Amino acid sequence: MSNNPQNNAAVRRLRLVQRLYIDSPTKEAGSLMLWIAGPEEQRMIEAFVLTEDSAGAVTRDLFLTFLQGTPGSPDYVADLDAEFRRQLENARDTLFEQEVNIQPYLTPLQSARLQDFIRRIHSFAGELKNHRGRTVIFLNPAQTTDSLADGLQQLLVAGLPPGLDLMVCDTEDGPLGRRFAGREDMGVRTLRPELNMDQLARELAAEGDPEDPAVRFRTLFLEMSQFGSRGAFESMRERGEAARELAQQQIGWEHLVATVLAAQGAHLLPHGDRRKEAVSLFRQARAAAQLAIDVDNPAGRAVLLQTLHFEAAGLLHSKEYLSAAEIYEEAATRADRDDEAFQRMEAYRLAAWCFACGGAQVEAWQRNLKALEVAETIAPDQLRGSTLPYVGRALLEAVERLNRHDATRDIRDRLERLVGADWEELIENAQAPVAP
Image (tube, rainbow, N blue to C red):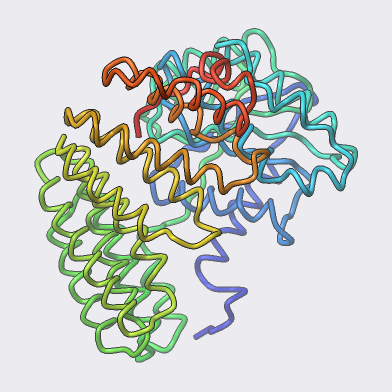
C-alpha cells in the first residue's frame, strides 16, 4: 500500500498521458491532435496541460488553453481572441520581464476567421525569445460541434503554420471523433489514453489509510462526481450525503459541506427538469458556507462567493431574472475586499443584466452605475480587456429608455478615462456577448 503522493493512482495516469503525448510523432508542419476521451479522461488531459505550465513540465512546448465561446456562433473567434487578450493581461508582468511586446496583441482581432486567430497566436509565439518547443492551441469548449469540425478541417486543408498544433478532445462518436479519428492523411494525430478512470477513486482509497477521513472523503467525492457525470443522480446523492456526513463530523471541514452540495447542483443544472433541485442545492450550499464563516473557517468566504454565483446562474437558467439579480447583488456586496474589485464589478454588471431582462430598468441602471463606480477603484490598465465597456453601452442604452440624457457626457467621460477613447470600438471589434 503506497502513501507516496508522487506515485499515486492519479499521478500514474498523468504520467501515462504525458508519455502518450511525448511518444506521438510530430512533423515540422502543424497538425491536429485529437484525444479520444470521455469526460473523466478529459479532466486528466486538462491536468496534463496545467502541469506543462508549471515546474513539473516534461516538454518545452507552449500550451494555450481556450475554454470560452460556442463553436459555430458568429462570435466564436471574437470570444477566443478576448480570452487570449485576458491571458496576456494576466501575464503582463512576466512578459514585460522577458521583453515581449504584447501591445499589438491587445487590440481586438478584426476578423471572424479562425485561421486569422491561429496566425495571431503563431505570431505571438514567435515573439517569445526563450520558446524552443512547439506551440499548442488547446481548444476546449464546453461542447464540440459539427461547426468546429468544419472549421478545423478548413484549417487542415489550408495548412497550419510550422511548429503549431491544434489540440482537441472528443469521444469516438462525437463530431470531432467521427470526422478526424485515425485520419493521418489529413494531418491528424489520434491519441487514445486508456486510463480506466472509473477505478481511480478506488485505487486512491486503496493507496491510503482506509480509516483516514481525508481518504474516505476524497473517495466519496470522486465517486459522487463520477456518478453525476454519467447522469446516475440517485447514486450521486447517496455518495454526496455520505461525504457531507463525514465532513460534518470533522473540525474545520465546514466549507467542504458546501462544496459537496454545490458540486451536486452543478451536475444537475444542465438538465432542465432538475434545475429547481439544482437551485435548492445551491441554496443549501450557501447556508453551509455561511456556517463555515460563522465558525471562522478561513475557506468559508471564498466558497460562499462561489455558491452565490452558482445559485444566481441556476435562477438565470430558469429565467427567474429578478431573483437571480438579487443573488448577484448579494455576491457584489459580499465581495468587499480591495482584491475582489473585479468580482464586485462583474457581479453588479450581471445583476443589472438580470434586472433589465426582468423589466426592472431603473434597478438595472442603478446597478450598472455601481459597477462603474467599482471600476473606478481598479487600475485603468487592467480594464481594457474587462467587461466594463458593456456596462458603458448598457448605461447609454438606458439613457434613452429612462430619459436621462443629462448623464450621457459623464458616462462617456468616465469610460474614456478608464478604458480609452476607443472603448465602444472594443465592443464592436470583439463582438463578445453581453449576456452572462
